[in-house]
Length: 341
Ligand SMILES: NC(=O)c1ccc[n+]([C@@H]2O[C@H](COP(=O)([O-])OP(=O)(O)OC[C@H]3O[C@@H](n4cnc5c(N)ncnc54)[C@H](OP(=O)(O)O)[C@@H]3O)[C@@H](O)[C@H]2O)c1
Image 1 (tube, rainbow, N blue to C red):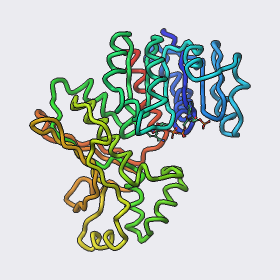
Image 2 (image 1 turned 180 degrees about the vertical axis):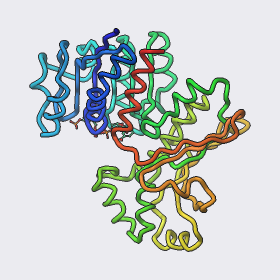
Image 3 (image 1 turned 120 degrees about the horizontal axis):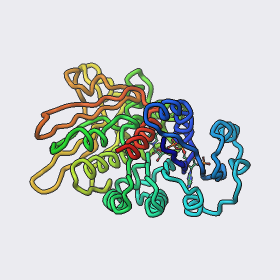
Image 4 (image 1 turned 135 degrees about the horizontal axis):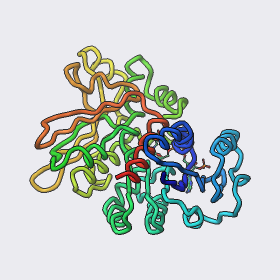
């Protein structure tokens, strides 16, 4: 039996879902993988932080945050900043789930770097540090003989990065194409039922899918970051979100949605990338797809990616109605893979 100390940096939708999943799966982790764990640290932005080397009561932490209370009552010491928190947690594994920063990847990037330097496995659901420092963090993990894993950064818990890492040796990714942003896909699906753009955005916000400022999704930034992440990791070509040819869905009118419907088609925000002689062409743009396309039936918050490799001509992954629990599963899978391989 191997015991691991875990630290959760970020305890919002995903961090809390991870805590629930750890509780739900703890017996299976013990019986199937000989893994036991204690959570020695949980940190948030506005809900305080808790450190306890003997283990934090996860049920109590969930109750406190649900009732908008600080976690500090669960702490046996005072935490001044997040770098101190990481060091003081003395964790074996850090799960980082703080909000994404598309422009710099910070401060999550500094947190993941600090965790790896202290000899922890670093696991994140955050696209920011992935696109801004994939090579650096991967190299640091290699030097420290630890893992930097990020399955949940694209398509939540669906296996994409681990699929290529573990099951597709020597396959060369030539191109991919997909619908990778849930918020815009939901907005377009709602508009097909007659809702106008602003009401569809308001609906996406009301169910917690779109943020208060939804421009990161609507203007294609979230999709561009995901494209950059897939190109960087799976094609081995470092690409920044700003280098993706990007157009969002803001200009699509109800009349265009209706006219597509009359033709038996649907608008989708399509993410794509293809290797070229030198480098890659990567794009995010709305396109009409017909019922002969796999993308036609991927509606609401569901997503899809279709890969083209030199050995498997084309294969797809579809994820239906993802949510924080699916994202949390990607983190849990990364944990098990990090400590068992
Ligand atoms: N939601 C999903 O299903 C999903 C899917 C794929 C990827 N992701 C990624 O997962 C990450 C988390 O998403 P989420 O939906 O859980 O976000 P969230 O609900 O907004 O939670 C973010 C958490 O991070 C804390 N936080 C904010 N700034 C911090 C800082 N500087 N230092 C330490 N803690 C900080 C927040 O604390 P307070 O609440 O106290 O401010 C909160 O606990 C994001 O990077 C997101 O892009 C999410």
